[in-house]
Length: 375
Image (cartoon, rainbow, N blue to C red):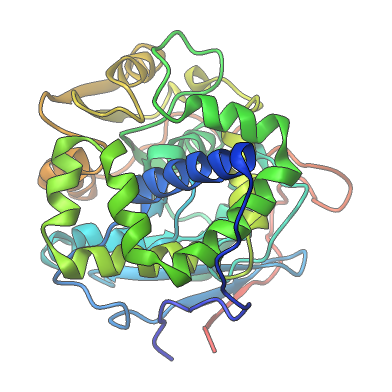
């Protein structure tokens, strides 16, 4: 059945908080919506029920929730949303995708949307999930491109690192750099570090923020819009439908509760388990806005230095989201161009790292996986 944004069923009420806690909640709310704006905006031409979400059954019993856009017969490209976010953010480029010759699969990471939460997951576990998803939607050895937006850049890099012989192109858009990178910190980095130090409290605040989002959505968006770049503010606030889509995406990200969002933020602010330079074998493009306060220009330059096969695309007036929207034709063209020529992989895959005995190392034959529509 068609997929809709879901309103949380837990009772929503305004909870008064004393000074310090209230200030922390306000800061957390501003930070979360700032991230959601970076990861969950949707196009005014897109309707939330235009695409049916599907579930992919994984070998360990978990499920991945994803949705498809574009040409079903086109070259396969995987889209990894921001931190936090959901598959809905692809709506931002819906019109361009419909006109392209690409088949884009936007997938929710564990704990977001309807994807099963995994409290022990690591970034280096993601390629193992992706390998099974590709086998379900295409073929076990099918080549594919990857787009990583904002916090999704880390997961795109992890796949390029694991599958240099299969990833046709890696596009990093407004990508957030790892801790310790030689780059200017973004406006949300301090909050990310706080979340890593206090994950339990952070998870509770995310849950409370979700309730506030239900009771006073317009007030929340209006208040935190002061933290956005001018370009992103114009994109979102000048269109009532776009603001409504933003709220739908916020709800989708916490559909299964705050745990998935909290884990995603903690992982972004922790050691990734690999260096971005380990994805250097794959052709790449780095897309960066000059007015992005979340993923600063120096973060984009950091990725460009790490990836010798990358091209640098700088939008001087672009914000976190508008850099993506303004440059969609060029981003998609990277994959269309490679779809028109025979693909030759860089080298054999290095294999997927595993979290423990329950996660088998890549096998020659993958266990059977199935995809079905979301009920």
